[in-house]
Length: 157
Image 1: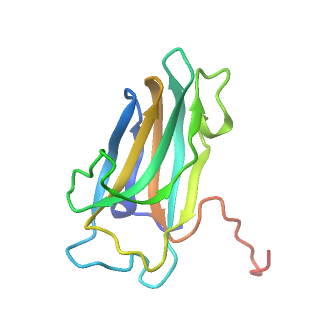
Image 2 (image 1 turned 30 degrees about the vertical axis):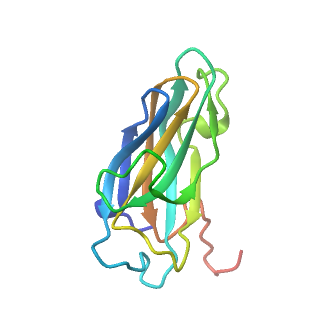
């Protein structure tokens, strides 16, 4: 997998926050002209958990989105264009968290839609439901290989 800072939205970026939607990490400027993000090759949007995601004393949820918008401060009011969506992850304290909220988990690995017109700026939104998230960090990035994809020497699965 080839990864550089220009393809990375979040690198151990905190998801701590109150209920609502927030823009996380860096935003990618795609330029004024609509373009093919993979130059004809599939590109994958990946989100992994760096540090376990924990909520404040009661069960809550967190969900992530790859979104584009005409402005660098991607809108959190529902007007941004959504291109990929994670499952809604139920979080609580470390003792009862589901597998998707634990360190090392892959929350999302999805091929970017082909033939999609993206708005100028691309970034990651997180929506926290019910309660506050008090701990947790994620990594979010684009790559040319899906995370967790096994490589076979002979090319046969």
